[in-house]
Image (cartoon, rainbow, N blue to C red; front, side, top):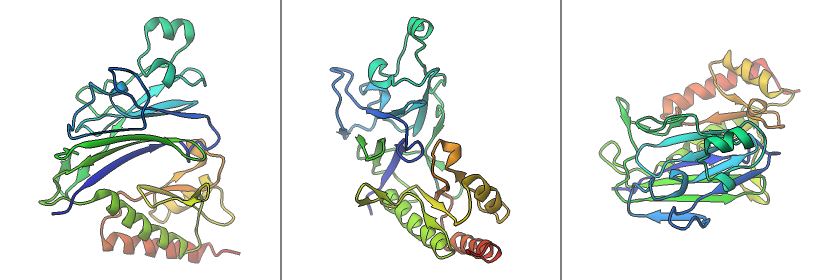
Length: 267
């Protein structure tokens, strides 16, 4: 039986490279900022500030719930100020009316808020029920900040699989398929350190702007997110590897990329 570490990472460093960022994680008992909370108790969302680790840029803030829900919630802003460390997510009606403070508009109770993370066993959704605890982390990179939640010991298809490594493997295979067909990696380093493979990676194609590349790849059955649409000033695309799950899927991806490259030769 292998240990599973299902990791959710919210990063506001790549998609909004030039925006100011902040991160926040603290116990409700003292409100002192920390970079990590590790606990064998899988549900601490009522004991940890803003229910789990959070990250912010000048446009919005995001948080991950410290429980089995996999919930990702959003804090909306009316202005471009940094508010997470000041208001700690929860604002009063008076602060919103007089100071134009932001607020959390989604009702996350019984839902997944803005969105959620879960596994799929081929027939049904599998929630991230951690049997060996959780770890919440926040930190800074060269260009921004991130918040991360790791669930340990999640039962999945009669085994315990290391999901973090699985997504890393998928990203490595997908990157090779793109780079073998003329694409290049847009964000490949954080300072002097190479960026490790994970849930997303970024690519570009010579002579293409992000929005145009996104549209043309759709004609070949490849869905991506353009970097300009996320607020980045870099041209390129974000690629998610969550649906690339078997050899047949990777074979289809490679065939479609080969067709695209043949129709759009690099000059």
